Image (cartoon, rainbow, N blue to C red):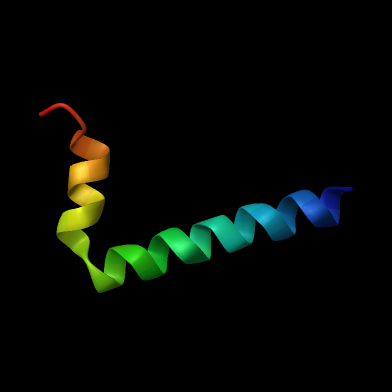
Length: 35
């Protein structure tokens, strides 16, 4: 159970990091939201 949670969380973080590296401005829009 713990391994599954850590694995999923790690995968999500890796995906977010790759997306940030590929397009920082896209990440900024998601975080900024309504700004």
